[in-house]
Image 1 (cartoon, rainbow, N blue to C red):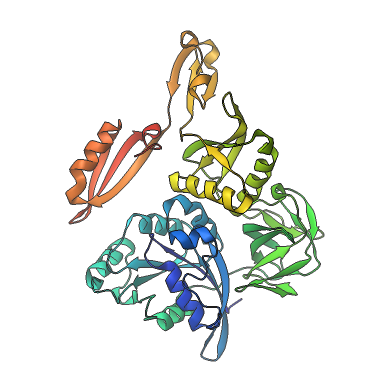
Image 2: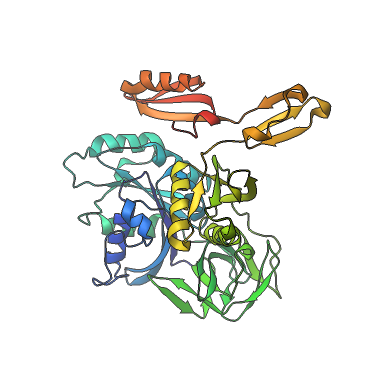
Length: 455
């Protein structure tokens, strides 16, 4: 265990996470020249076309330092706020994080929110100043911002460039020296946390897990705690560029399990795997339930495809646990699903993935939010998804709508226009706070219904 390091990469959009991950993989010879391509870990067509990371990707590297072999498990995470649930799951499987900041843009909103996620899990943070080769880089100013944000020593910030490969050896040294090795009891009963899963049409469902205590061997009879189902571990292994089967995976390591599971509902992200004969006492504390922000209806174009759409949604949910859906019917469109998404981009990506990966043509209704209506008779609560569900006004006591607290970080030049935009959308300003001489954080309370559509 002393020679394993589990870490993830967190940053704002476009600060160069995936490019830096490519350099780490090349430097440790995890990939050959022939396999190399830009943003290697972004393996979905959609990710390549848009140049964004949608899924977090796990890969294992081997690194030699002072004659000692180390195993580094890297998880590359998305930077967009709509996929922050992916980030929170990756963080749960790690002991450390590389915090990447673009030397020409400085600290941005998503840098801060991903950093808070990592600090809540007590991860060791290694700050990295990326894109040092750009003519617009401002290393000294950005270093000041990083020190203001996380404290620590200026000299501990590593200058790097994903394009030229500058600083990559220093990053690998820092990972081995600064990130703590996993802790766990190798002799305890097996406890492994599922942090992701994918559907493979030939092998059934593959779950990715991190072993917290104990060990798992090929052919073991295992039990998934949340669902109570039992399976044989037909194949286990570690994740290189392709899966590498192994006989045993020990405490602290990350791997995958294939056990011939066919039903998407049987695998839950955040579940615990244990042995059937020697179960662990408690399940691992998984992730908090995801809170959808934007709701929209998804309906099949042809009503006969309803069952097929349900199956596609379940398979998509395996790979993207932040998708929430329940059946609903509409007078105009027939049967479909009411889905909860983390944001507008998330909704667009889900729609594209349904079309590409499952050949489902769907109709998406305008995003909206749910309201709570309270009746005069015994204060009964009715949840209203649609204007047509609104109860008769004469029986209505009051209606509540969802409110959000918005933290808006901006340059001080734009304070005026942003305030007037928020006030037009029925927002009230709660607080205004200067982070640096030219960056302001504005805190507003606003109705969510004003935000989900075209804010």
